[in-house]
Length: 55
Image (cartoon, rainbow, N blue to C red):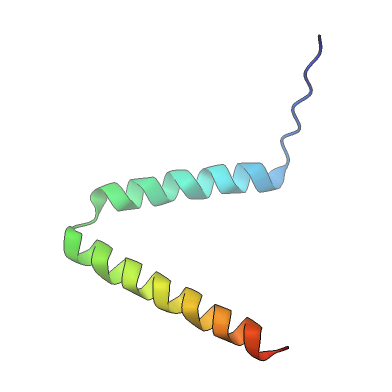
C-alpha cells in the first residue's frame, strides 16, 4: 500500500505562520492578547461588510 503526500509552498507557509503565531501568543500578556483579538475581530467584520457590499 503506497501513500503519496504532496507538500507545496502553501503548506510550508501555513506551518511557519502557525508556529510564529504560537510563539508570539506565548510571549503576550493578557492585555496585549485582548487588544490583538479585538483588532482581529474588527478587521474580520470590516472584511465581511466589504465583501457583502460588492454584491
